[in-house]
Image 1 (cartoon, one colour):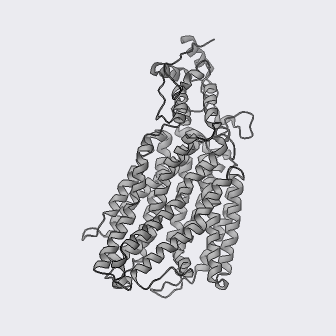
Image 2 (image 1 turned 90 degrees about the vertical axis):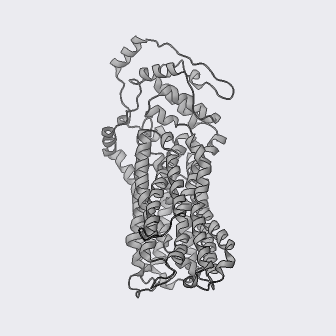
Image 3 (image 1 turned 60 degrees about the vertical axis):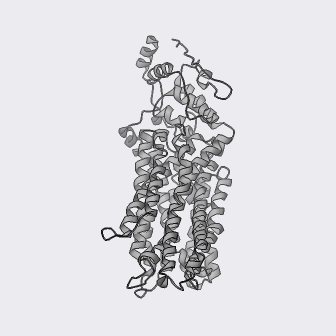
Length: 569
C-alpha cells in the first residue's frame, strides 16, 4: 500500500527545505533516523559553538553566584555584625551555613522540578525561565537590607532559595539541550565545555571581589581590623557586597534572549511531541541559525496523525517511566549516575569549606588592615581556582572523547581516594607546601575526573523521553550530598576545639571520611555505561544489532491501525 507524498513549499540556499529531502519516505521511523543522523554526523560548526556559549553563560552565572557567597559572607559580617557581643565583624557560623545551604536546598528543588517539566512540556518552553528566576533573585539579594521585622539572614536565605531553584533548573536543561544538539564525535567535549564555564565563573567571582576591593582601597585602609570597620569603611564594605552579588545578573541578562529563542531539540519533537515533520524541519533550522523550522502546517498535522501508530518509540507516561526505571538494566544506570554524583559532592563541597586553611598556608588569610584582608582573600581564591580547578576542567574537554567518560571517572575517584587518605592519615606530618600541593591536586582531579563526568554521562545514557528527568534526579542527588557535607560532616572538623576557637582538631578525620566516599564512587562508576562516540539512540537501546539494544525500549507497531490509516490516505 503506497502513501501519497506531500511536499511543502519554501526553501533556499540559507534555509534548506529539509522535509522535502525525505518526503518520499513513507516510514516516519526512517525519516527520524535520517534526520538524527544528520545531527550526529554533522561537522563541528558555528552552530555548535553557539549552543555551547548560550548554555555555558548560564553555568558561568551559576558558578559565580554559588562561589561568590564565600567572599560575600565575610563582607556581611563586617556590615551587619559590627557591634556583635562575640566576634564582632564576623558572621556567626550558623548564619554563614544557613546562607550557603539555602542555595543548595533550592538547587535540589530546581533540578528535579525543571528536569521533570522539561520532559513534559519541552526543553524550549523551560529554557530561559530558570535564567529569569536567577536574574530576579540575584538583583533582589543585592537590594536586601536588615529590618526589625526581617533579619538580613532571613531575607538573603529566601532569595537564595529562589536563586537556587533557577540554578538547579540550569543543570538538566543545559546538559540535555547541548547533548541533543551535539555531533556524536564531539558530544563529550561540547558538554564538558559548558560545564567548564563553572571554573571561569569561580575565577570571575574572585576577580570582581578583587576589583571592588581595589576600588574602595582608601576607605578600607582606615580600619586595622574588621571589628574596627565603621564609618566610611563600613559604608564601603556595604557597597562592595552588593556589587559582587549584583554583578552575577549581568551575564544572565546577556544570555537571556538567546535562551528564549533557541529552537526545540529535534529529538524531543520526534520522540515526545511525536511530530516527525516539524522535527525534520527544525534540524536544518538549527544548523542555519533560525529559531524554528516552518513546514506546511496542513501537511504537518496530517503527517502527525498518520505517523502516530507507526512510531516505534514508546509514548512517555508516568506508568511507562516507572516500568522503565524498575528494570534493572535501566535502574542500575540511574543508581550509578545519581550515586556517583552524591558521593562526589560530599567531598567536593566539603573540601571547599576548608579553603580558609589553605589560604592560611599560602599566606592569604590575614592582613594588616581591612583592605589587605579582603585583597588577600580575593587573590587567594584566584590562585586556588587557577592552580587546580580551571586546568582540570579543560583537560576533561580535551580528552573525554578519546579516553572516554568511564575511565576518567574511575581514575578520578581512585586518585582522589589516595589523596584524601594521604591528607587524612599524614595530616600532622605534612608541611604547608605539601598540604597546598595535595589540595591543588585534589582540585585538578575533581575536575579532570568525576566532577565533569557526572554532569556529562546522565545527559547521554537515558532515552529522550526521560533524559531530563533522570539528569535532574542525578544532579539533585549530588546537591543532597553537598548539603550533608556542609551541615553534618563539615562541622566535625572543629570537634574538640575550645569555644570561640577557629582550630580544626578533627580535620584529619574529616579527610579520612571523604576518602571513604571517594572509594565508594569506584563501585557506583561500574554501574554506568561508556558513552564515548555512541549515538544517543544507541545508548537508549533503540538500535537493533548493537550491544545496548533493548526490545522493551521499542514498541511494536499497531499493524491494524497502520493499515486503517493508509487506506484512508
